[in-house]
Amino acid sequence: MSEIIKIGLPSKGRLKDKSLKVFRKSKLFIKDSKRNYLSEINNFNPNEIIFSHAREIIERLADNSLDLGISGYDLLKESLPGIQNNIKVNSRLNFGFAELVVAVPNDWIDVQTIADLEEISFEFKDKNTGKLRIATKYPNLTNEFLLSKGLTQYKIVNSLGSTEMYPFTNQSEIITDITSTGATLKANKLRILKDGGILMSSACILVSKKSLRNKYKKKVIKKLLNKIKKKG
Amino acid sequence: MKSKKYSDALLNLFKKKGFKVKEFENIIESKIIIERSGEIFKKSLLSFEDDNGKNFSLRPDLTISACLDYIKNVKKGVYKYAYFDQAYRRTFGKESLVRNQLGCEIIGSTNLQLNLEIINLIDESLKKITKNKTTIKLNDINIFYSLVDSLKLPLRWRLRLKRHFWRPEYFNELILRLSTNSDIQKNVFELDKKSYFKMTKLNKSKTIAGRKISEILDRFQKKIKEPRSNIDGKKVVRIVREFLKINCSFKNAKNELKKFEAKNNLNLKLENFGIFNLQFKNNDTVFSTNIGRNTEYYTGLVFEIYKKSKNLNLASGGRYDNLMQTLGAKTKVPAIGGAINYDNILKL
Image 1: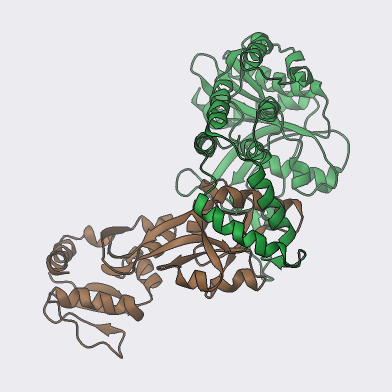
Image 2 (image 1 turned 60 degrees about the vertical axis):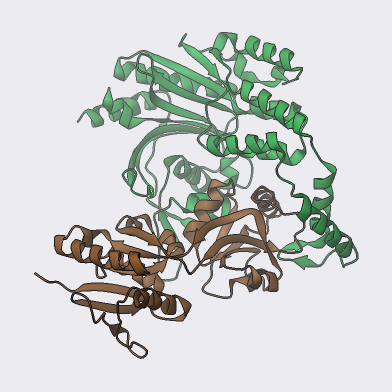
């Protein structure tokens, strides 16, 4: 029996380029895919490459419409437990490094730690001006981290982009965001709290757990991962 | 059917003592909880939006439902609630989303006798229906607050310890940090000092991300004026840890606390605490400084009741004098309540 192995890869940007490089270095040749969201590895068992949004790859692995994929560790950890339970992290790759951090305006000179932030959150509560607002694209990781650090009096503002400008446009007071060098935060007059590191992320190879329960797919996935491991 | 037998028997005993058995609304507006209690509650709410984008939740807890009922329908005076119904919370796969909750609340009075009434009622009722001997464990959270106030600590650390008493795991992290003095980073602090002088020249009423420059400068100054040495931190942590180990018969509680006071040269102002005057019907009553640390809203007396031989928790509760205002009451409405650990009763 030969089933088609479905592989999800990021559809744009550096994540896409570097993911393709991993396959190329492993001598797995993917057909030109510049204008198409579908492709395949020429020299491997029957397969299909599907180029998708990195967040979508995680959801499709969880519902098993993909067997294997490359996406960000941050996006996996942000997903709901029900999704994470269906996905196995095979390996972390050597690109896509970034850290999810808590950042406050530079001029909040009295705030160096989450404990300071906690006090500020009570100031907002006591002033009756509403809760301290935290803009983020990562509400689940942010909640989990802040609650574990004792911060409870805040409100999440879901952001879809340009999160760094939220504190200066009265959309939130502080933010959590992903950063690789910290340059964008600095340029936007924000600074990372001393103990404000939420999660270190990188690209990783993820496998659908359901696929691993299928004998044929498990064998082919193992073969593919071995090739990537040796050369990738 | 064992379940029905127990719940009916308990509710009947409560009714005989003047409690009114109430049913509450299944759905509440989420903002009542979120706006006042923040994300920690939001996380566990089972919520949905209506066509107008208004967010609603299934009731997460029946103590909260009783409080909301009082605010909406009773409004003033003393009201005694009893209930047995379901509450719904997200549990992230750990437990069932539906919890059976059986409990009673007295809302609207600070009378010390009511503390006694509710504990004795729950204890006697449990003994009657389960035919088991019980142990009562007691504490008053304000004794811990009094301890914190008597320690040589900066105000912000006092507030921190009080605010997080109810979260033992995080509390332990906090006291570790207190013993190592790690909340001021020297190099960042020097940079901030430069910014401080620049900022003093700006318009103090200007706002930066919701905070006035004057507020930021005030807090910065307060922070640098309240330095503390490692030795103080370590000493405080030792005292706090020693305090949280006090566990003795209720009759000896005041003496034990006095010994602790004398040893550490503190004044806990024990004469202010009515708990020591309570007379319980159950002779097996224990005082423990470490109980009542799992619920945010308790403000004073807390209790737990156990099956004597197995140390199985059968009920717990306490005084929550600030919750009503948090949920929207215009004035402070004191309250006390207790919940039966229904699943454990069914195990007996």
